[in-house]
Length: 411
Image 1 (cartoon, rainbow, N blue to C red):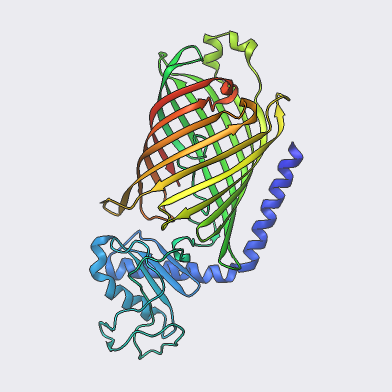
Image 2 (cartoon, rainbow, N blue to C red; image 1 turned 45 degrees about the vertical axis):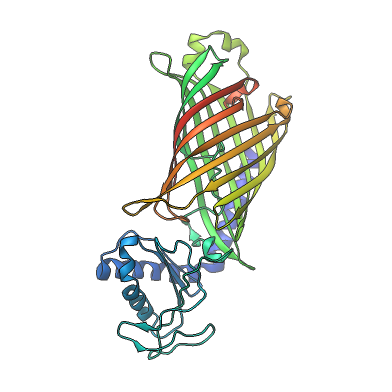
């Protein structure tokens, strides 16, 4: 098994070296401009902490709703930075969450005199109208709705977290109430936690409007029996691996290779010595691939995929799994300062040959809080329902049902 992890690490390092060599110069220039524009916004307009992306001759930034009145002045300031060169300036705000880089800008601008916005493909000189284009109509499938900044340790994820998957890496804390009782010592109330995340190491543009990133995923999943005096630990699962993700507009894919091992809690073994004899070591690697399609400006999402287990222990553990689901990401209905609040919901389904292909169902719904839609961290407050086999370690043989409430955070 050690040789497999060495090979995986070597592949990741090789990909990272190749990506940096391929587009290092362009990324440095874009990052410099992003920092410079951020400084202009802070000094001249007292706007801080907003998302700024510079890529491919285009400047994209998001403004809070209260700054909408300054859009004309901000556009003029950014256009002046181009020194007569043509550049697209795309401003996202509360009125137009997903603007396009097609269409026409305003016919007049402060300090520029009367004029007509340039047509597509024209070259704008210093004395002409401002060299930018902004459309007020949300596009269908335009790249700026899906395209993310490139470079080392980039913001955002090409393949976004699966909302209702109980085993997607992230930070979370959930209260779960079992009905009927959990088969483990009659558990009724538990706290399920996870500590980890998806960490993109590098992202690169590919031909034909594709993007690719690679990185690491790691998480510890654990649950505690809150019906005991000290909320005894029952089980901890360790998950770690590497991934490569791809996106072409509304299509995204992820390929993962990861290890998972399970360990019973010491308090469980002390309170129930029978588990010392019943205990099994559950350990495996899995090759896993999932494809995803977004619809209607990323409001709806469907995904499907599967995996194959390697180096399983015990040796008779099933090898094949399938995984699929749907999600809803609603429009923003409230702002908390710079933060957007929107409704979300998802249904996740899994089947495993080890459990006779029974369907495990996870349903979640609630609200999501984020700074911007594509690149900022996200916090979710979700009501949850689960019916299926236990997701924790060797307890997969037990069918459980619970309702609960969870808080989830993704960097």
